[in-house]
Length: 230
Image (cartoon, rainbow, N blue to C red; front, side, top):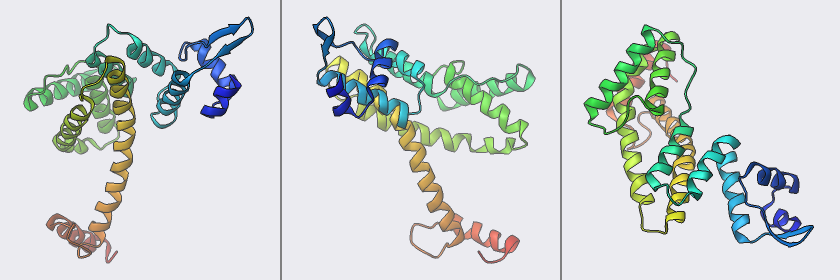
């Protein structure tokens, strides 16, 4: 185990903890007090750390996802649903007419887009909770961007599945689905932050380059009227 610790950079105590949780298989016993660990153990450790540190999943969620990956009877589509469900955990939203209306709005969105998705599933329920929270905070008008968000989400989802659907053995494909879904979410969030910075620059400096659009010029003029030069 000390060698596995050295190769992976994960402390021995943490490795033992992962074994107790069932996230990492036990080593092959070579004596009553010693076990050997191979490259598969190191690979699994690195996967766990990626899902935990970069992906932001809890250890319980990682356990659910890895059980789906390791189950040969679970098709990749089922593994994808398991990973996605943990990226959109249910929010504590009080029942009431606000939540009912938000759920209906999500259902209408799914129908209008023609998506073959369950509006009542975890992702739809999470979206309804966000709509309720926006309105409770006095920013319900932000929901006007739903179609823009949906268009971006659809484009990303199709690109991801095009990459994740490459031919591979079942175990490799299942793991690829998990990594692409969980770390893809983190990657998209980071890219969104970079895109925000670029969009904000164009709003403040609309003449700074060809990437800035007519909308940036219009928004910059409105900003100057309200606040003066940036």
